[in-house]
Length: 291
Image (tube, rainbow, N blue to C red; front, side, top):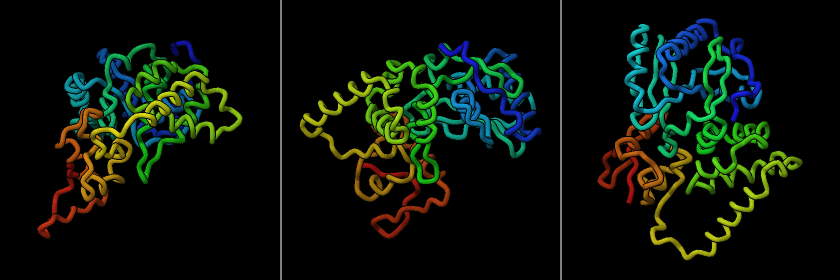
């Protein structure tokens, strides 16, 4: 769908020369080896919005089954490769510089699968022609990032503002699946942010989502009401609910691919995270509890 789009030029000026050389060599290594990957993050955002900004890393989306091959290629270049969080993220290090290898979302709801590799645009990234993650997949990933220190809602709004008429709207609805309320929230905010451009969101999309909302409101209360899905939006801000109030962690339901050990390690990595007092006066490790 996007292969003929005129995309933003390479972000050479936004990346330090030494870092750019590392990224360029890594990209060319993967291209030469024929390993399927997609460029995301600040580079993809620049392609689809024209917003150029400095980036601290390079985000590459891969399928989990390709990690070992990618790691082998990177180590052959003299770099370190590690599986940082088995449920979603690995990293490649060249000293202090690093590349993120992403094969799921941090909340476990958006695994990278074959669908991600359909109809991708090709862009020049630091002089290397590469495939870019599709807008719909990037938008899905960003829609769930609502931490205190990072909220990607503005990125979502800018992706919509720059591409509303080009989006695969049926595909976007399909991607959000049971999490359609998150999409409705962002589309509602888009109409607030750009009041003169509300019409650019197809009327049928808003009508479909509002119909779902109205139908849900008329339904009786769910059998299991003691779930907090807020942990799918923020790994930290809803820990009080699961650790102190006894809510079931939304990441430990069928909504996510995460396991209890995944949740525990991801929670323990929160900067400044303090152990939770236990009932006997001791300390419970960082893993959130659930009913």
